[in-house]
Image 1 (cartoon, rainbow, N blue to C red):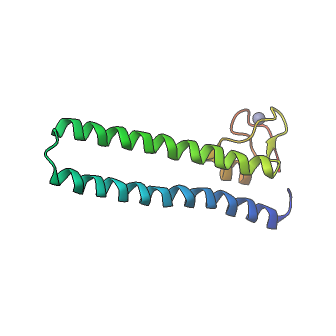
Image 2: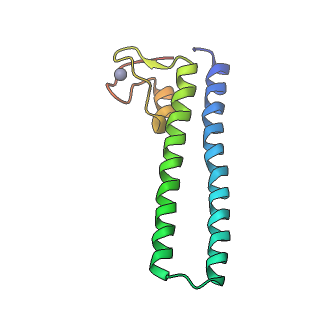
Length: 113
Ligand SMILES: [Zn+2]
């Protein structure tokens, strides 16, 4: 993957993963808003409700992180981006930097891209 156009396509695919997660955040916030409106109208125990919200938030964050990692790793594998020394795929959150520097985020070896 040496061509500039392929690198652009790769970065666009990574951005698409971010966009998917951003969209899910809006959906999540919308659901939280609806739930809080419903709770306002009922007579639920306050501490139990806030525990529920914290739980939902943590669950969402875990979902978002897993989606980013699996999504970006999948894109990298599709484009054949691996370290020429240790053979690992660059970490999802440092994928773009790893590509630009062509340096592995695990061992510092050269990225085969
Ligand atoms: Zn490496």
